[in-house]
Length: 165
Image (cartoon, rainbow, N blue to C red; front, side, top):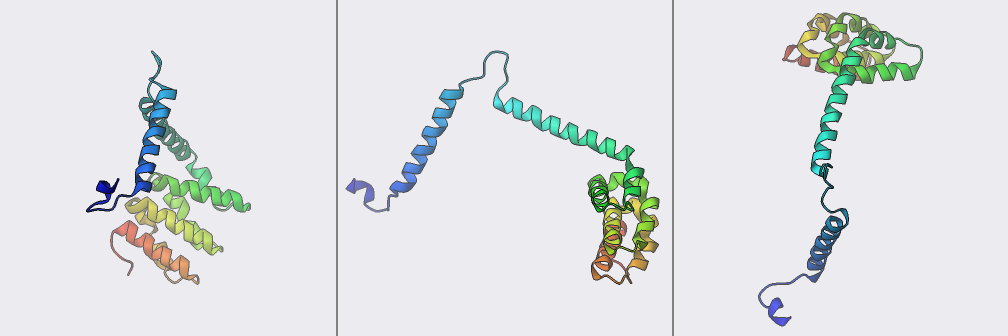
């Protein structure tokens, strides 16, 4: 043992952790074994589940696109939970919500600053397809709420590719 310590420090704690980890991995492989004939390995199963996840998200996006007008109208719903759900789903759509730009613009003048803020955010996330909202967003640069003003400036930058005037 003394020859191991000569010239450099030997850390037994690190060695025991590494050996323990290797034993654990070996035990898992022994217990699980290779996949039975006709069954896939965990890598294949993971790959399939990842593809299903992507396909599922795409399908949900298609469904949301068909419900775009409902989501936009829900921005003015009296129930706060319905409004927040609409905001989240419109944000997730991002550029795919471009068909609702003309319907979202009126919300930039909503009495609730949070609705104005998120309407500007949604329009900014849509990007260049939301150029019809530039004039309303420029008006919003004089909003009474600082956060709404900042979001309007951000949205103008996202839509035009350059800063607000």
